[in-house]
Image 1 (spheres, helix red, strand yellow):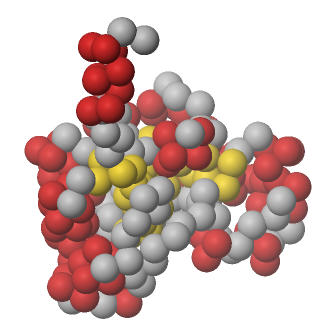
Image 2: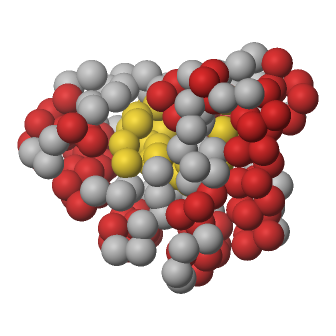
Image 3: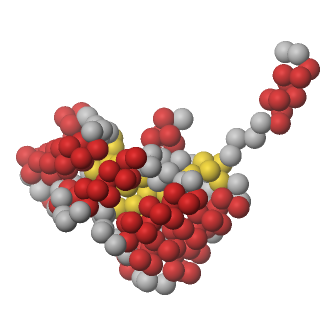
Length: 200
């Protein structure tokens, strides 16, 4: 290596990567607010959407916007069912229906899924060619509308390669998410979609 080259390598600093994920949407009111906030911050997130919500009202347009903004869209079953409490056939149907709904709207295949309640059947990975994505930080945002509490739970725990679980169907969670992003970006974190964390 020439002297100049080695200097460049010394000075390159990888940002700490973290993924912020949202379950249970899309929601006509709150998801739009979130997408605006993410766009303003140049942040790409991962959304695990519920099939029946995708097909409500104008929500298909929200999904198109998500896709156009570079967010990763994953599967959260069609009716938000606990995969281990239904038959194999029903489980497959829940996943496939949601995959079809997403693909029809965005034109993109679905590779990732978050099983509701974190309950998963390993054999479905091979049968349906989907990868389950769990989480490392869960502030239980659905149990409270106290934004400060949600923010504090996440930022005090956050470390490199964490996957943060939030829900885009609550205004308090959306507001908290944007505050979390602002704080962690100042601390040198880069927000990536979960596939970037898993693949690296």
